[in-house]
Length: 218
Ligand SMILES: Cc1cc2nc3c(=O)[nH]c(=O)nc-3n(C[C@H](O)[C@H](O)[C@H](O)COP(=O)(O)O)c2cc1C
Image 1 (tube, rainbow, N blue to C red):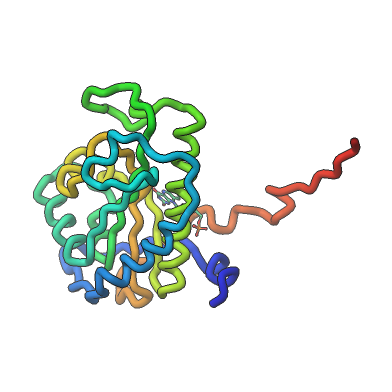
Image 2: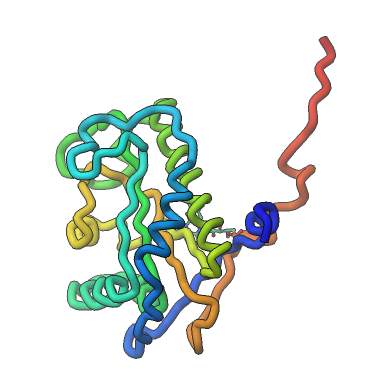
């Protein structure tokens, strides 16, 4: 596929397996995903992230990615079940995933340095933070495209229970990072797992519904 075909082909594909009979992962190599991430990491970013975020991973880019392969997905699924509580559809998704990529963004100014209650209270609504989110989103979209091109089903999820402090601890994600999304990568052949499309996929309208040419009159 050329790049336009890849962009057009990307679509949300939510795969819900059965946690009780989760298949063994196919065993894609970690290197194959790292290659996709290396390419996606070429996304633009306007400002270096704050130094407080550079202690464990040192890059100035305003995003981080924490990676689980298929075995890690199954183990996280089991940890969620041991933990109890309401994990929604996330265990079913972990049952079918070949990879889970937890993408966080790095807020510049923290308004509340005590234990956060809601992510919304973690950052101030300024332009720099907006641009950090924009940059991390550009990286995430590039990742989805690279994964689409590599033959994976992709799903960018808000994360649900994967945003919780417990999961952050399991995965060693610093508490001052904010989850931008949980990216699930699944194979094309998912056996008898349920596959759901993105519910807004066909609701975009046409180009003229969201773009407009302007003629300057002066
Ligand atoms: C930031 C972000 C978070 C999302 N979170 C969810 C989610 O939690 N649950 C869900 O069903 N879809 C989620 N989606 C996927 C959208 O539902 C999907 O992109 C939309 O329906 C359009 O479908 P398409 O991706 O196939 O074009 C998310 C998408 C983005 C960009």
